[in-house]
Length: 132
Ligand code: ATP
Image (cartoon, rainbow, N blue to C red; front, side):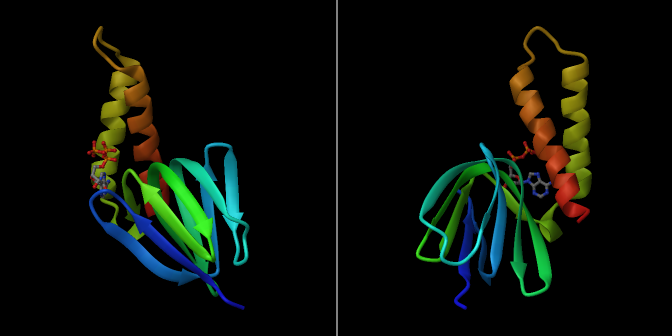
């Protein structure tokens, strides 16, 4: 059976071009999976992890929100930022997590809580993806 072409791009770089069998992603309305012959779809993505299967192997990618589109067996992910699990700097993510947790625990008058919450979600998700 024909597979899927998966392209993950950010404003800075092409993160992945690969032939895959399945893609799982975190849409704003919930998780969804894409197999070959899927109907055309456009979905906004949450901060979270995306995975794809190639045969028996599963690979994980961090996605910091964006959009997923599928048509003609081609999946395009336009992400605000994205990293393959192997490219994640875990120490950096742990530092970002600690900064965000401190901002949320001890908010100042100028603290943007929503921004800190999103930074925390990115950091936690990066740490999770890197440990897969
Ligand atoms: P930080 O506070 O550490 O910058 P952030 O969540 O604010 O984290 P982003 O704005 O999502 O960072 O990303 C900025 C750039 O840095 C992107 O190119 C992203 O891929 C990269 N990046 C951020 N954190 C990491 C990490 N832990 N490992 C690898 N690349 C990272």
